[in-house]
Picture 1 (spheres, rainbow, N blue to C red):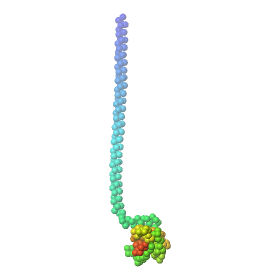
Picture 2 (cartoon, helix red, strand yellow):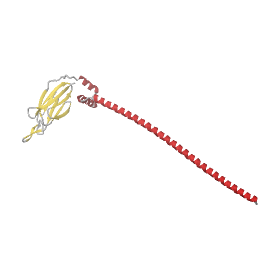
Picture 3 (spheres, rainbow, N blue to C red):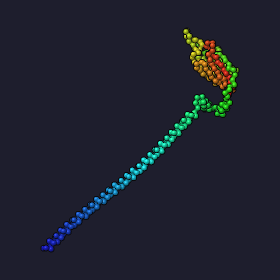
Picture 4 (cartoon, rainbow, N blue to C red):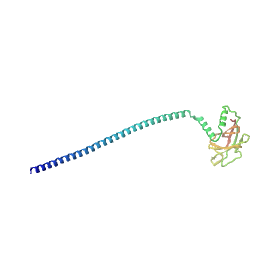
Length: 241
């Protein structure tokens, strides 16, 4: 009987020990798994932190490059603005003004219209301050109005090759419109002739106009005449060029 009781106690103790061992093994397994998971979490966090640190470093470097690029572009822009101001000031200094500017614009217009540059250069080169001119000729003609178209309404110059006529606004008297023109109102003068493109010009008297015909330059001056309804046309012929 004593031997049976002893075996029963031994089995009980072995079962108890085995339960303790299994518990310890389970605890070790659970603890190891938790420790491993903890280590993995730490490694993951460290890797993520390093990745974020690299990204932050790359962003900082990119930002620094952009700042340097912007600074360089601002410097270049400032230099270009400075150059532009210098060119503008030089252009203002060297740009002709007044009569010289008008002459350059006239030359550009003539070249645009097809006049040969060499011919323009020749003409300019032959022009002199001292002009070779003849004594002016003066003739008078009647200025036509809507109420009167007189027979003496045209005069000629240059051996009757250049004709001048004019028209104006009728004067008004106590009884209404009169036959002669009003010298205080604008008139229109026409220059025409053989080989001349008709030219109309006008305004308040006196008026002047220049026509180049063949090898001569004609300067016409239109002024009021003493006789009512008439004007005087003075033509000065000068060698051209």
